[in-house]
Length: 489
Ligand code: AMP
Ligand code: MG
Image (cartoon, rainbow, N blue to C red; front, side):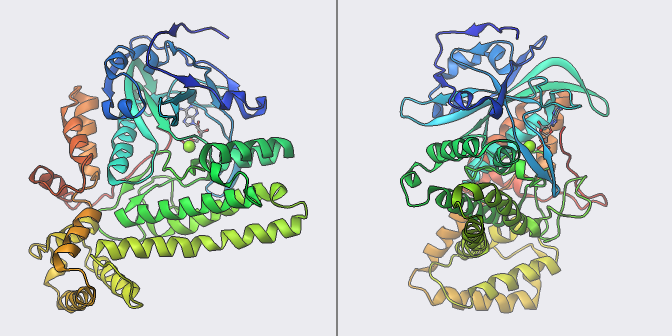
């Protein structure tokens, strides 16, 4: 293996706990250097959260490009498998390299990964590379998700490589630095379960527990607890997606984390008009990963996860299966209750009444029937501004509005408190597809990053309801061709 030069005496404080696991878990491999790297964006607030020196990082384009390694790095590609559109297959980091784990002086640990940094043993027929548009898109959407308060991997930097990458045409190559609380996936467990020993499976499960759920370590059955915790986090995560109208687009098991963070911003997008069947991904022809299907797919993926844990849950496999099933079936209840709670809050409701679910569903049904913009309806309700939207002119809506007002009247909190709660929980803006495209076009075609920077600024504070945000709330012009997104770009 060639040895890349190391950048020393910096604020990096890297450990490599994953590289200390058995060999089967990964392959040691270095990034492939690129010819003319140029830093196009650096996330200074994230750098601070990682206990890194921003001024120093600005000089470290070679690290973000994969031309040099930060001190303390043991670069690896992680092995994993996954169910893609329901079919099990071997995968692994085909175009990503984990540089190590940045440990802050206050003891937090974050994976630092380069995406688009060259071939690895898991690249199959791929070139190991990524292109500028999709890497900037991941940067924008992941940071928007963070701003919205939704658990997510984050983006520290994007560099242009100065090299062309062949897709349908020749495009600019780029490398994204992705930050995650870990890159453990359901697919990592599927990989070890399929090809590893029981001992390796235990090593993986113990590693996941140590890293994400140390409190369950000494419990009665830590592996059932691990399953419970992952189910709980995923139920909460997917409820948050549904509440803001986020469609992941490729919920394969390799794209579902153990930490409960959103990962893999390929074909994802936010819904404008409320339509439960919305699909953006060009390859999702049957709508497996449509908006409405996300909770059920979440449960299906968690059943795959549960299956991998059976050998650890109980020596009696029949009993293990029963115990695991008892947990997986709780997903739907947990999800429903997180979603209902989130919807109540979106409508300014503090307490619980049995009729709440119907009240919410009646609103959603009307939104679907009258093709209303999902985010803007809630935004308007939060502002108590009933001008301008088609739905508000319907008699049906009027009746619903009265029921809602009566419902709000039956709680102790004042109308002002309700409105505050609504503004705190309904984003004034989301990363609208046409706005994201506009920012990417300026960046990729004209080298003008100012449009993206302005977009990122407003997205970092989506609950502010400022006049600055106002112009980002406009839905796209109606179009005959639906918005389409792509995988593996
Ligand atoms: P994804 O669709 O991003 O979840 O990726 C699925 C699998 O394809 C993962 O194993 C990726 O590492 C791999 N992959 C995607 N794009 C490339 C590429 N350009 N070169 C090599 N592997 C890739
Ligand atoms: Mg993936």
